[in-house]
Length: 92
Length: 82
Image 1 (cartoon, each protein chain N blue to C red):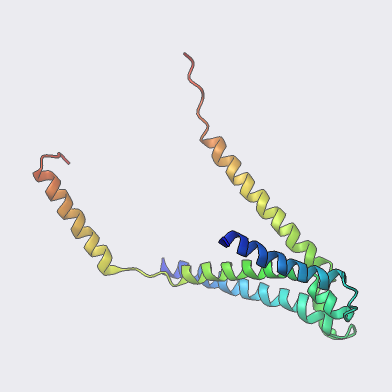
Image 2: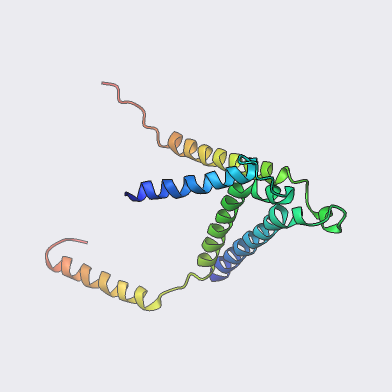
């Protein structure tokens, strides 16, 4: 079974469970408050995923650090490369 | 420069936390709270908890479409005349 089929099965199972609870398709007559909470669930999950993505982006922006050693090492390597190319005749 | 990064990042984190908490209380907690509790004063009626994210999604798609259109318009090349 491919990953796509697995995902589709999982998603459709969750969707069917949500529809049965929200629209009372099996006439289970759940209490009204539980139905009221279950009904916006797909949208709520989408909004919370968006909030989580935004928070992750914000956190990584806030903790972005300089790498002094890597910057110095890169400058050294640029110098070396320029020397090497000059020796081989490339005019800079 | 790091202060700018820190402030922007932290404000994004705080904003998303506030949004998540408000939306969670709105969708999950409110139906279980008695309708004469004072908490209901701070929240709009529940239909808006579906309409407002819908409007936000439409606005986001509009912005993305407008940005794409502007970029494509700027990069158009006039056809050469032979």
